[in-house]
Amino acid sequence: MNTTPRARVLTGDTPTGRLHLGHWVGSVEKRVEMQGEYDCYFLLANMHAYTTRFDKTEEIRRDTIEIVKDWLAAGIDPDKATIVLQTEVPAIAELTWYFAMLLTFNDVMGNPTLVHELKTKNLADSYSFGFPMYTVGQCADILAFRPTFVPVGEDQEPHIEMCRKAARKFNQIYCGVSDRTPDDGYAKAGGVFPIPRALIGRVARLPGVGDGTQKMSKSLNNAIYLSDSPKDVQKKINKITTGRQSPTEPGDTGNILFKFVEAFIPDAARTAELKDRYARGDNIGDGHVKQELAAAINDLLEPMRARRAEFEKPGGDDHIIDIIRQGTRRANLVAEETLYMAKQAMKMDFGRRTLG
Ligand code: TRP
Image (cartoon, rainbow, N blue to C red; front, side, top):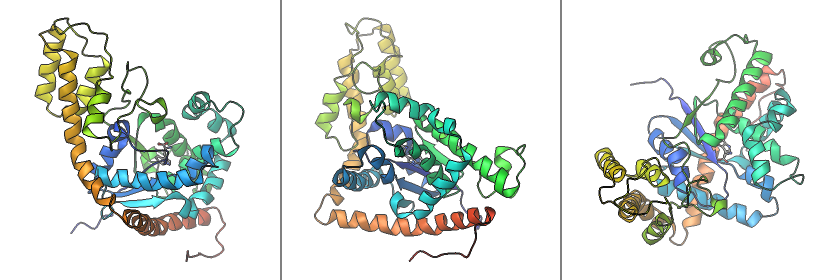
């Protein structure tokens, strides 16, 4: 029997609405793949939802439950992976404070993802003190589980970089690890925190339906949701515009339509054939490609629809809440252990506590 502990994986989503195909190819697909092989923790980042919607308590609660339904529908199995509710893991909130001391104000305010959000979310000068704090919170989300891998979409990379920086610093300052240690040597050198690595999904940035200039996003109203009906999928795919005039016009296979073809038509030979004919203008119209594409996406979503139907039955929410509670209990065992190790390193150990 193999007794080496499995490498840990942590990732999560902020409950802001239903999951879409961008989430699937960016990270969720990878989670389903990894859950059998790694010790996986999938975090419901509900605290982060409060950073911009602190007055929308009812919505956040709903979104938190709905996102678990999306996860389970997508194939995440609570018997294989641990589902974690951020606000019931106190070690995360505590570690956030300690990491906030190890990062500079400029590390946080210069984080490219945060800068982009401040610009695009129209937060101007009105954002709360807590909003930029979520980036430090995300370091704690991750490091509380001392994971090896963090599967995320490309937009999350700056956060993972910040997390790696906080981990290196903690290990150097409190565990006496040399700053010349290679990233994969920190744990061996006596650090509390391994330096985690981002795993970017198979499609780094899926465009939304439309002209392809924007990424798929709920707020831009250009998303195909994992819970969409077959008809809605076809309708939304039909909204893709390429500017191509006729089926006999040589087409650009680098266009938005083919980004979708490459992401969702599973048969590589068929994709190559479509590309070849499209490029030559061999009597293949956008309409035809869109039909094949929608069919492929519907094949992907069909098993998800079937699984989802199970929780939409009466009493389904209780079942979901139960899964959240059980996962969070397991998660706290790991996070409390991490916090205790960190406190020992920081000479703050005045006796180990237990959560009730
Ligand atoms: N910020 C992430 C997002 O918006 C969600 C998230 C919170 C997360 N904590 C995390 C992702 C920890 C990976 C690891 O998608």
